[in-house]
Image (cartoon, rainbow, N blue to C red; front, side, top):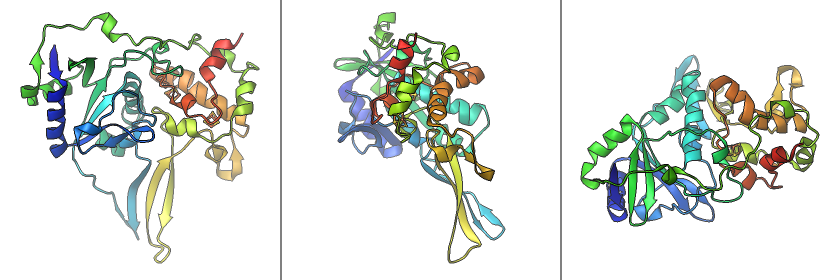
Length: 320
Ligand code: SF4
Ligand code: SF4
């Protein structure tokens, strides 16, 4: 097992910033993942309000530019990324997005962003607030390195070959330690909140209507979710020269009626209730049927950020 003193860790970060894009939680009005310029910006006390997905699955991405019959795919800069301070829920959400964008069908844009990235986790000792429920879902150990906060130092767990290579490359910063991690060290207290793990028989339960009445179809839940991965594709044509333009994609959201509109003006989830339940069922049933794990990682962001504080976990728990 390796350990690193916090002041040494900051020196390591300062050196990494010169060579990599270092992304960490930063506190402004709210906490968000940002590219940092110095280690003192790192904020580990609270998880980020916003998800980390935008560093791999971009909010706006040009897929190609066209001019007449010629098509050019933008070449991305190959600068490596180090992501720090990722919680267990966020790490598992990256794993879910890898399943959707790499394992199922390779998305070259996403894959390129993921290739040169190192994921460094930060272990939560307890649920951050009443909305977290990561302990109710079968989350996996998915990280390159995981930091366990032990006061003046971090104990470092290695989770992959990439993590091992990182330690070897920066071995002057790490020390061997006899301290080993116990099961107790890995517990996240108060995080098991979702009592019913199988919701397949509850689709027609009348209690959903209580939540649907409060839902504004604003899609904040989709945007804040670190796992949601739907997108829309559009063309933007240069108005002065119609032979030129670009095809781009943007995040999309299943809670919006326009998302479910297809050619011929058919809207296949026209009712708000259908859209509301679709998100919950994709998160807790449909994705699992295909990939063997829930899409949801229990981060609680969709509940914390919902303008009417709809808590679908509470609703499911109370269904008789
Ligand atoms: S954030 Fe809340 S109100 Fe907005 S669409 Fe999602 S569940 Fe509905
Ligand atoms: S559905 Fe909600 S709780 Fe689950 S991962 Fe998405 S934002 Fe987090």
